Image (cartoon, rainbow, N blue to C red; front, top):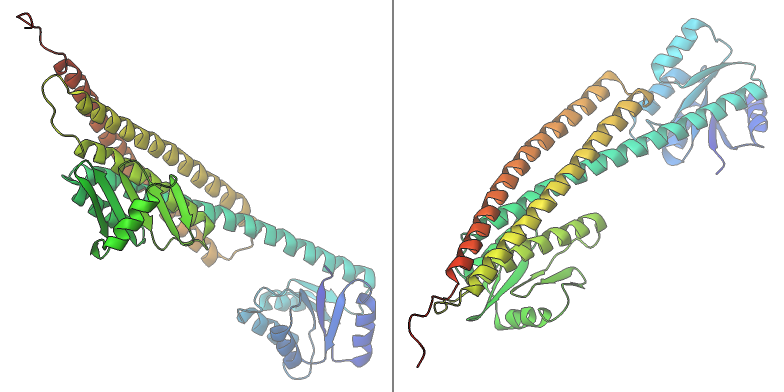
Length: 388
């Protein structure tokens, strides 16, 4: 793409000469005053400004300061052109925010070389900024995902306090609400199905819709609605962010993991006491619940390791790119504070994840022992008399 240059020169002959020097390589527009420059820069998309220092009305230095003070033109680079190119003049250009300073009369080869150098510099800065933005975005996504994973684990802990299908369905809806999602859920047991929504018990129509989608696949997308189904539990999420692909995918993963835990809890709640000698359902329930918790703990450890790698990469990228971004001290300090705050947040999340992992391991071990105890209790007693 050909670069667009705004040349500011009040002398008509020099303006025509300047335009002729550049027209073969760039798109050139010329204006004669600082006021015209400010108006043109605000209205047009230029890649750089060639700015004469001595102008009628406001000077080139003042024009540059005003360009840098406006958000829409603050990043527009300026090369000063002046017959006075001494040290004091160059310092004034630097203080005004100029990129370079070129003495008159202008030599075409030198001018083109400086313009190309500036354009290469801008392209490199743009590339570095995009890399830094991408790294920062990845870190924020990782921290957000870690917080969302914490909500899933919190639901797993709370689900052990659910004593029936109704309280479990209410817990699923409450957990979805913490993700910012409106929902309705259904938990199925031998005694029937219980359906619950954000407004309370589901209407007959809502319950029938939940029963219908339960016969579909594991995850069914219905526009901005998503249904997730397991054997004993289903949920319909009503306001999924389909326009945010990354968040949309994360929420589906988190809610699927959450519902898998709810399904394991529903299996435990569905157990009815059996006659002596038939404890196999209890053992199966305990083993299933323990396996589900073990899988949740494994995923939590894997996610925690991934988040740490992303943050370490961000810190490395920022350390490499910050000296090249030419930030001022205030900007460097602000970026450093943001990084330190993110590091503190990650450290806190890591502590929470570690504590959660220990709790899950303890519960898993307790369930394993209970399952082994049920296995022993399930052996039929020795018969002491022959059958009649």
